[in-house]
Length: 175
Length: 232
Image (cartoon, rainbow over all chains, first blue to last red; front, top):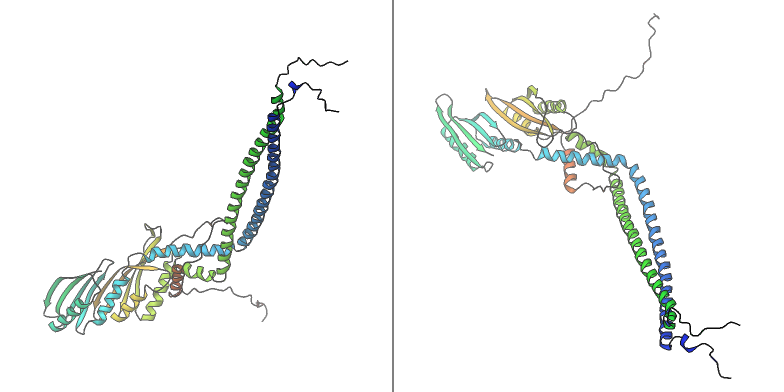
């Protein structure tokens, strides 16, 4: 018996429209499946990161507790670094220590017969007043002083002869 | 009997009716996909940022713990050595004690020690000037002057005047003595801490090798038996 379609023909959609409708329905279902899978995946990944974050926070708390027990050590380290920083400021200051050392080395090398009358040691310069008993001692001393490389410049500020003491000279050394 | 009026026209054509549900479903799926991805990805990115920050903090704390544990046994000695070299209070008395000790060792006499009022220099350090006179033979006086830079607390010789009379050298010296207040705050617990650099370690050794002041500890008397004054 042939199939009888009792529906009026003008009420059914065209076959092409029915095909398009089917395709769109399939794509929608696939998209919905993707949404569900993605949601599950994203929730899972979010949960994984949250667990790692939780673990990291727990470790941090543990480390903070350990560091708190080392507070005295930290205080001493901070103190040490602070003192060293202040000490560096002192060590960076200009001082006459090097000039004193140079002058000491100079004095030790001077020959006998030369006496130191006065010496004034400052950070920028050294002023020295010497008495030499004879001209040979004077010449020897001046040669030694000029040969030393302790000073940037040496100036003879005064030179005199005294029959009682000998040759009196004043020198200014620039440090 | 029910009748169908085939001549009635519906609002939507049959093609549109057939497409209504699938297209609606499609748009729903598309909207859900966009919403899920936008919200999901932004939440995940935010959590990842938090995790990265937490891991960074964890590394800092770990490094800090390691540094503190590695220096725990030695840091007390370091702190002592540098605290003596750079004290937190006026150390004039300690310096005078050191000067007396050096004067005795070098066989020179130390006289007329004067201390000026404290002042602050441009680096924030407090300082006072000790003026002193030293008398002796040239070699001994020079030795004393050279040793003045080798004791703790740290000091600097600002000026030295030497005069000779009758074979005796008299040296008048201005010695600057420094101190600085202690730090009052510890860094935050989550702040990184660096171990001592090579330069700092070398300075600690240098300060430990300076002539240290001797401090006398006065101990309290122990209880003793009380003698009965009425027993003869």
